[in-house]
Length: 501
Ligand code: NAD
Image (cartoon, rainbow, N blue to C red; front, side):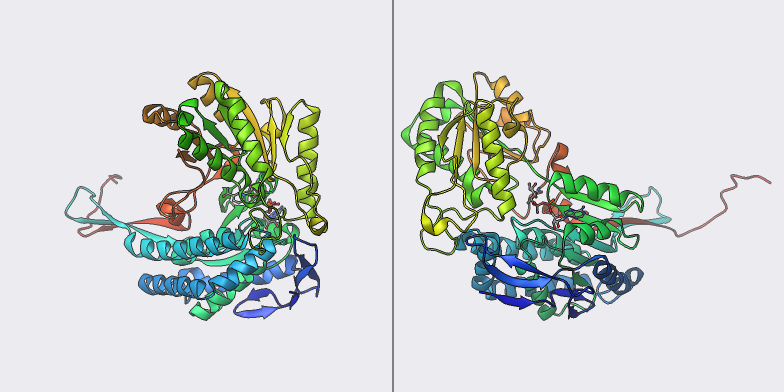
């Protein structure tokens, strides 16, 4: 597949090339061939898209913000239907572009569909409230209004999903948006813009600029006509976005990384079934999408008495994970997204081994000849890790699981909370009281008990600490994109006589 989409920039309802004429090759991570050629936008393209969104917002009186809320919800539902119509095509495109398995690509489309439907339902039910001002002569209401022009910047691991978690609530609330997908995986976001257009979104309400973080994303973060920037990506870029946004005091939402603990108590594994489930889910937590998941359970924190048995089985099964092109039948793990991500993973593993970690599975690239051109790395288990190690503290974003151990519940909690991040974590225990106690003490935005990874559109997603600011999904995920306005109406105005003269 090699497609030419040099007109991948979408401004005021028109598809364009980059102002500079520059293009970028989007590569297939399974063999480094060219999947597509897209526009490589720059600051001028960002400015044009922001100007279009600003004009379309029209101080809240533009065609989209003044569309009745029920009609906005209806359009979101049409987008959901179109996503399902194109499920196979979009799932395949996501699989090819991001390297995930075809089944994961399809599941992403379903999750995105759910998000559009959820926000369509939510926005019509959350319309504001009447406030009792304590007087029959006062009518006081709090209403919700759109924030304005929203800059939406997304990463490469869940391109369609991350874009949709922002686009759906932003449009539901009546904002106009400028979207910048990752330069590495822009293809499904381009496809989504075509669906928004097909669903009947007015020109200028949603704009798209393909191109690099700097200058395109950086310009969006600093631009005075952008009212809100919502960013999902790494900590380093997120802090730059926050700094760039400061001068114009725009609203900032950040969904950053994680170094997520998966805490396993021995009591979860006293039966054969319990043991099998906890091992199986620890594999899933760490290695799905080759570990390129912000909530990957990349830190296994297991009770000391269970360690050897648990890690031996984990390593045995990790070695059997079938690696390959995500679209090939039977493949369970695709490649890493880029040569840079592969090099980063190799570097982390080398540093861990130098610091004393013990390799139990993986630890290098696969040997199969047909995998040599892609950016594949074998699922890797590193035992005997400790919090002093770089690999335990920093996000690898590759298929690497570190193992630490604890003896007491307090120690397990202390280890799990010993991270600058706080996105997500898991607790495995057959003792419901213990599991709830530990969950209550974890400083993470999502805690799974006897599970790992599920999320619901109705439940907020986001992190404590350096995992970010704000929440996506749930009612808070819509509130991010709304201003609240208190309108206090005095029905019987009289002088107050504060000043007596
Ligand atoms: P990244 O920070 O390199 O890039 C993310 C996006 O920001 C891209 O579109 C990029 O072009 C843009 N960008 C880069 N520099 C910028 C700048 N100075 N100003 C504005 N925009 C800029 O992240 P990535 O490598 O694409 O994605 C991986 C990271 O994303 C991981 O850290 C992962 O944990 C995180 N992530 C978090 C969540 C979450 O929900 N918390 C979800 C997915 C990914």
